[in-house]
Length: 390
Image 1: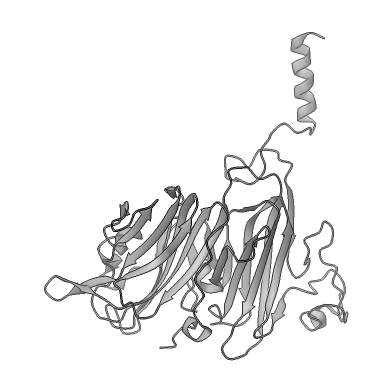
Image 2 (image 1 turned 60 degrees about the horizontal axis):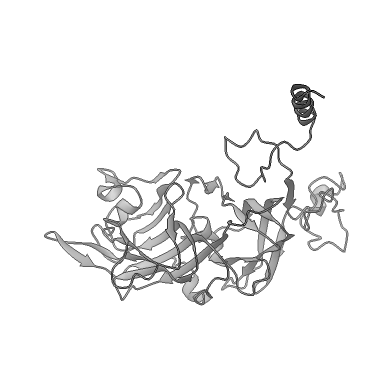
């Protein structure tokens, strides 16, 4: 067969559906949406707890073998199977519920979750385990993972995190895994309440590149900062990249509070960091207090935002609360062997003098790294974890 005819034949076969691309379906964007992939899409939710092919919407109203017989069984009783019988789960106080368990290789591409109850987002602890690890790579209150650290709804419209009315939490962080992924949610409500949760985990089964690192997220809280530097992340060993920060910041003094520098200690840095910002408002990609004559400007963008300003007495008062995020997506902070990240707790006194503050700072760090990861510090107790009501 002449060579030109052979090429035409191969092209014709490719157009009829034979695999013509090695695209694994993980790195999706506008430029790759047209590419054919052998990746297989799956979804885990209360309507399909295993994510198995063809096993969704099989719950039967009033089936005593269901986990939650009384969820929507009555609403669906006249319509029967296939009519939204099992859309949510109840998690008892003290219970850790497995949201999803997936066999790899593959990648979580989207995670949506919401609660029936308001003001419980610090009472639910999200944990994610990769492969066979015993300690989680993600351990964080649900609200802080989704930039909702003060248990009050804040709209977020960013690339990896979207929070839509009334409390639709969405994560688009790409989370590849090789052997398995296990996601759990613990109810540590201090009042002992059972909590209702709706959720959906969308993932693909596909090959994972050898150089793909694992997603991590870690929460810390310092209610009365005694050191002037709040540690966002420390003890990281291995190679990877830092990709984001969320801060829930409560001010314990009047005046402007956001002068502190974000510092990144890379690969053995000790006293001095390699990367140092010029101030918290600058690190969040704003400037000059991000306020106006009418008070703070709440903004939410693809890479950064001050998504929440709870200031019942107006601007610059003790007790003001803020939600701030900065995603290092276009500019990930690369490290080869170690990483530490801090933020100074710094404001102004009268007369143009810096004020070393004692703010209530909660932080969530987001990064990718090679495994194994160092164990996380213990989470604060549920009482310390809980949000102050003032």
